[in-house]
Image 1 (cartoon, rainbow, N blue to C red):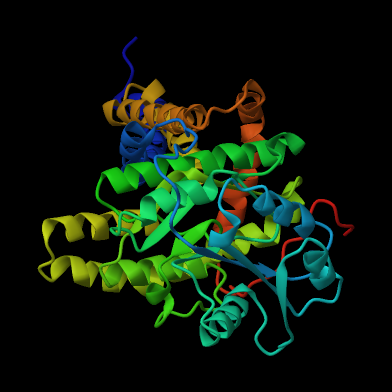
Image 2: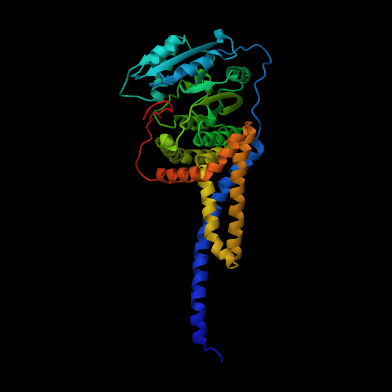
Length: 427
């Protein structure tokens, strides 16, 4: 018995509706995959050219650079002694290293701990302008007034272990006379303390080491990360730190627009304490992300304008790199975006749609590249096997970081500096 055309249409209508829905969902997946593939490509290129193990600095000749180390501290009595002892153990002539701690609006015994460890402390009380940036400006002005600033100014946080070869490595870079600003490898103290710290160790191996090497080898300016930074004093004369939470990124872009590149010194290592639980770092992470978003909104038009205004090839490369870096989401977000894109395209791929199959393949490849980037970062810094095992906890942390980043895009919030609670402190 032959079916009427009306019966055939009725039979095919649900199937056509399914195909139409799959096509619409697949288009959404394709859009996400296309947009998110660009930053994955950028990260992959940096990883391919920036993977190198950290090696100990080699002393070719007697050091000659005098360093003035500035350490901002707010209520750090419990942990600053460890940081100061690591500086005291540095393999560097004592007469070429001066350490100055600014105890900024402290309500504990930070200043006393500094004195007991044999270092100079400057006590600052100004509740109208708290924070790391104003404290550093105050201390540097105080030292310049008394002509107590050496060849290079170094900034180290109060929760940080300084590697014994940090100053040797910086000396070898600055005594060439070609470098005005440098950033050391900012890593994690006690990465085995928890899955969260071990995961952060992997993240900083990628962000602070592999990508910094890659950016410099591409002709870009290495980022400034707030800890382990070094400057020729004249660079800071007309560029005071702001009270913005990401004042380091702000300063790096201003330097780039003025033609000053930041060098990366892989063997100058500092290791900072990191929160051992995700809830301890949530406010810090959210403010960091909001700070980066605000910096991108403010500086992208200026960088784009400078790129168009006839800059030379080397400057254009550095400006293009800065634009990529400012718009680059966290790896967790890229991983989630491509997983989402593949999931949206799967129904259409199952129905044989060529475009959806392509989306699944592209996003699957990007997920693999992001994972390879994380593994490559750990390999580049000589990580232990335990740190690779920390990646097994990635799904939970990736979901947390993605949700946090999405909330950071919403209006409101603050980008003011807020001290993160240390692991040794009670809530």
